[in-house]
Length: 100
Image (cartoon, rainbow, N blue to C red; front, side, top):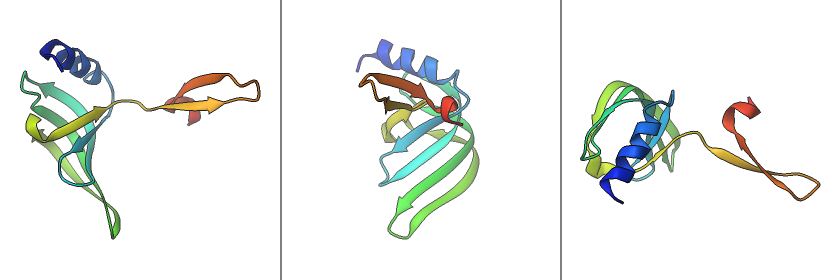
C-alpha cells in the first residue's frame, strides 16, 4: 500500500468517533478515538479499550491513552457496513447508526 493511500485512509479514520484496530497479537483488538498518526503508521488512541477473544470467552480492559507501533497493526476498521437483502432482490448498504 502506498504512503499516500495510508495517509488518506488514516485521515478519514481520525474524523470518526471510534475506530477498531486489529493487532498482530492473536484475536486482540483495540477500540477508541484515533488522535494522531505518523508516516510509519504509529497511532495514538484515546479512551482505548483492549478486547480479546480467546478460548475462555471475550475479555476487555480499559487502557486510557495508548501509542501503538505501526508494525503491530493488521487493519484499522471504521464504521461497518451491513448488507440487507430485501424481497425485491436489491441490495442496500446500511450503516451501523441506522440499526440503533
